[in-house]
Length: 250
Image (tube, rainbow, N blue to C red; front, side, top):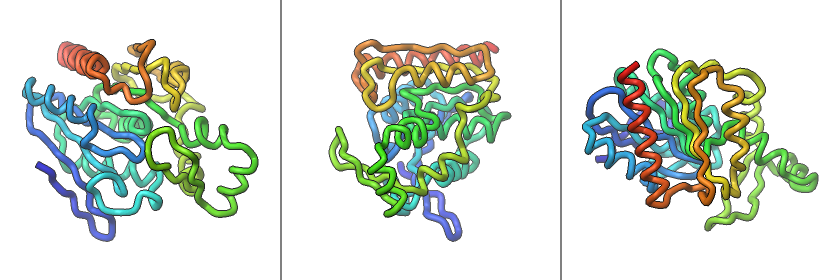
């Protein structure tokens, strides 16, 4: 059942919280994605079967939440995730961040260090606005974005997703990969080596900056960015089960 977090002066947020035992699991979706994606639903089914608490949500401008996508940026979506996290979860939580959700998840973990006990990234893309968008733009597209405030690049998947200057500038204030990331819990980074959106070596950069020693990178040689095939979902659930056992046993 879809629930809604209403906030004075801010877009209301749609989420779905399933009660269960601790540690709970929070799924954080990607850029222009929503909480009804394949990975979110597969994890929800697995957590219900385990009797483990689970939360999925839509940031403002995504899915069933209010707001316009083009008005949002990393800081807004982090605030949304924090608002739902605080309102709908209790106790220790494992975060699962997909693509942009990996960046949001790491920022959330740093904001709530006493609550987040583990992190799983699926094609995690911290700093993607700078390292994977801005750096790849040629001079003409940079000038277009600086002049008009929005750029609509071609897309490999359906309708193109607008990139705003505010997204780029806001992201620069939240970069993680230029300094140590002080998260102490276990981290697992799943990444497909056929990922055309977020190169798999991005996982190496993320692992290098994490201060925790308990970091493992799991590469899927024939995996793409989505990692939503049955075998990918099985691996994700297995990874989450293993982390849950690690956290519970620790």
